[in-house]
Amino acid sequence: MPFLPTLSTAFIVISAVLVAIGWILIVKGKKKAHKKTMLAAAVSALLFFIIYMSRTIFAGNTSFGGPDDLKIYYTLFLVFHIILATTGAVFGIITLTLALKRNIKKHEKIGPVTSIIWFFTAITGVMVYLLLYVFYTGGETTSMIKAILGF
Image 1 (spheres, rainbow, N blue to C red):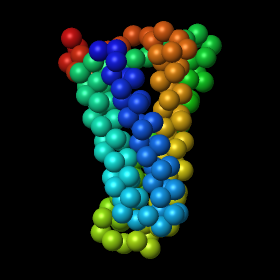
Image 2: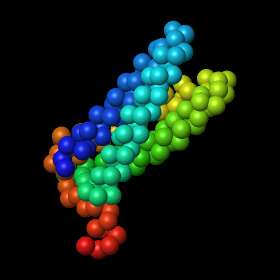
Image 3: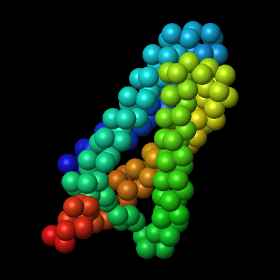
Image 4: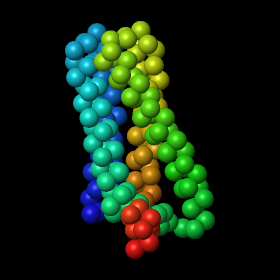
């Protein structure tokens, strides 16, 4: 299903754009619009995660298909992206929880940090996508189930 990486990447980009719009809305004092936009950003990020995990489990992950001399740099970049994405997701959940529990003081402190982390996550995610599917032909794809069960 070659369209899934494109679809999942689109959702993470949409999420980042919605976070940017949400940031603008809160600066303008439009709290209700901010809340709706940020919830839409969270749903978009969740859709990314569902598609990504489904693809990872059932279809597999694609290895880097570019030149061997770039593989180490790609791998280091990928590890950086994974750490950033994991951190961004944890911060996102905390930030969203604080807002929904009406702990606005803490939400206001952590929200901008979360947004910046999320922007970098989206940018590095798009770069991973480009390196795997646009700039170079993707390498081998092996499903997690096949890898675990040895099929």
